[in-house]
Length: 220
Image (cartoon, rainbow, N blue to C red; front, side):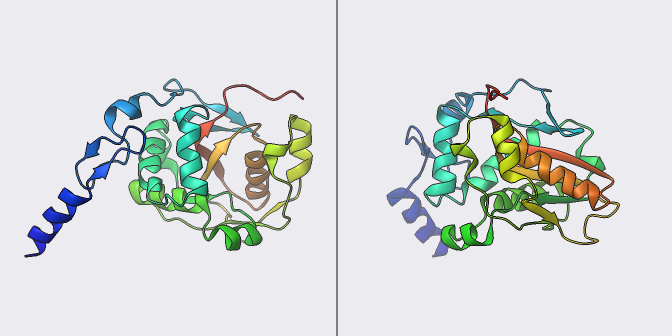
């Protein structure tokens, strides 16, 4: 009986690609293969400098990737986190997963989390940690609610905006090799501040991964 009900639900309400609305098998990715191939890819093996470490990213933050991120962050499409984590895992250099002790994330402020109802980077981190069979632990808190980075158009302004905005939880990061997760990287100022905080708290090493990266650098 349960199988028949499920089949009826699938017939009446088929799973559809978020972009082209093509019907998809139940349980499959929310983006069809054709539309997924159209996302602007970062060339394989490309890493972006962050502090004294590097950041991996599967896509550039433009076009359909920007649309997907908007659905995820502002339209409640939480289920996208599993699809996004899968693509983020594929962007990791081969040697990274075996060196990671714990996955963590760049947190939003408590006020923003209450307003939105969730932390988008935490959802990504937990989905990615599940794929890597790795613990996922909050190692940072946002202690100052900085201005939205999107409103700032130079790297120096963004660095100043997030200076001392994050604090590592005492003793939690010590001697850990950490994979730090965020949704988007633009100037890298937020990731740098978080990496610095984790290193000052005694982290053995910090790797970074985001779902998307802006293609063009901001002026100094």
